[in-house]
Amino acid sequence: MAILEAEHICKSFSRTEALKDISFSLEKGQALSIIGSSGSGKTTLLRCLNFLETPDKGVIRVNNEVLFDAEDPSTRQESAIRKKRLHFGLVFQSFNLFPQYTALKNVMLARELLASEQADYKARKKEIQEEIRAEAESLLMKMGLSNRKDNYPHQLSGGQCQRVAIARALALKPDILCFDEPTSALDPELTGEVLKVIRELADDNTTMVIVTHEMAFARDVADHVIFMDDGSIVEQGDPIQVFEHPAEERTRQFLSKVTI
Amino acid sequence: MGQIMEQMPIVVDALNVGFLQTLKLFFVTLIGAFPLGLVIAFGSMSRFRPLSYLSKFVVWIIRGTPLMIQLLIIYYFPGLVLHNPIWGGGEAGRFLAASVSFILNYACYFSEIYRGGIQGVPVGQEEAGLVLGMTRSQIFFKITLLQMIKRIVPPMSNEIITLVKDTSLARIIALQEIIWAGQAFMKGSHGISGAIWPLFFTAVYYLIFNGILTMLLGRLERKLDYFR
Ligand SMILES: Nc1ncnc2c1ncn2[C@@H]1O[C@H](COP(=O)(O)OP(=O)(O)OP(=O)(O)O)[C@@H](O)[C@H]1O
Ligand SMILES: [Mg+2]
Image 1 (cartoon, rainbow over the protein chains, first blue to last red):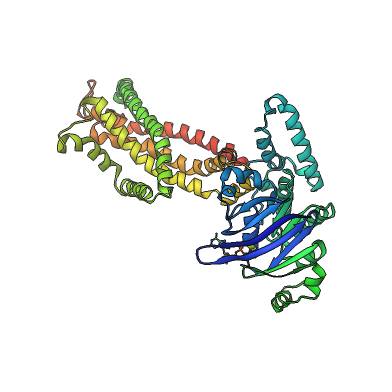
Image 2: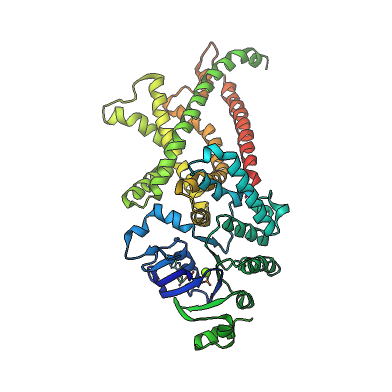
């Protein structure tokens, strides 16, 4: 059964039609790669999934629950959106770590704030905080950053920052973790360490949507690939099919321009 | 030289009184201009056009004209032109008029600093917070506020140091601050007349006070140095 279904998503900015009738679905535990040239709408699509943009048309369902329906204004309420966002995690191209907090605190902060709204928070404060800290530490360990947990973002390399950002997104246990070109802001020698942790997440069957320009990585890691051009899905299928036997001329052209 | 040493205790006593008035104007201006500046900053960033135009217009007028003229207009205009001397007479009235002028003037400068601080925080910070399920107020208090303060402190320090010296402009409406007190010894006061050195000596007060402020503000700036 599909964990995520997006149907007929359309999104226009004042002059550009960034998304034109996008529909796709994603199975639980699978990794979806979205590839496509600059300006094709990949970021806009991820931002719609994370409610940073509101689609003009379309429906978004997670686990059969309608999170967004452009026809149904009640799904647009700010208070409701906040909870719905938690189904998704988003790792940004530029990390967007909180500079005033250590790596560990970056990972813990959102969980702490959520926990503080719990009814039994006051009574079990110590216990809850210990639990959050332990989980954050184990996430950082998984990212290979145990010895960096007390460093501030400016003391970390780009690759380390991005791994903290991944841990921060994982801390809320999202159903679907989205990546927007997670290695594009990194020096080439640092991309490997970030791709490695994403690969490990894929091996653990984390449900992911990965926008990337790393074609070899997309082919290896993804269970499913979507090629977008000019706001539309041109072609989708399993990686072998899309990369080795593209059916569409536009896909072929795009793949011939990028080196694998 | 010997004469100066003789006059010194009398002069210092008088200058102290004047400097107290200087300090009063300084702190009252800060207390008023910090919040008013924030109001003007939010006004000029408002999506409600008339409000943002009005805020920007006020800032343009205030920053485009000398504080000295603003002082004169605010103090004399109600009484001389409108025949409604709202400030009342005497030192209290002058202090009130000076305070209003300084607060309005500095609030406009502060508003631009606030605006730079608020807009200087990358949108990615707010978006990261939203994606992590934080409320707008959690994002403001836990994430953006400190980053704004860090951006605001250095330009704010400059303005505060400038304010210390700008208080001397209130002399133009005869507020009895330290310059006024120093100048009094030229015409004659406390049995001393024709002495210009007390006026020069007021510089020492400004220097020492600004030295202390620079140290405190520098300390605050270093406190926020732990992140970038
Ligand atoms: N906030 C916005 N306002 C106006 N136009 C926008 C906005 N965001 C995106 N666009 C436009 O929408 C289109 C799709 O942009 P998007 O960022 O989604 O592309 P992308 O596939 O992520 O590109 P890249 O590979 O360069 O990141 C572009 O033409 C872009 O200029
Ligand atoms: Mg993009």
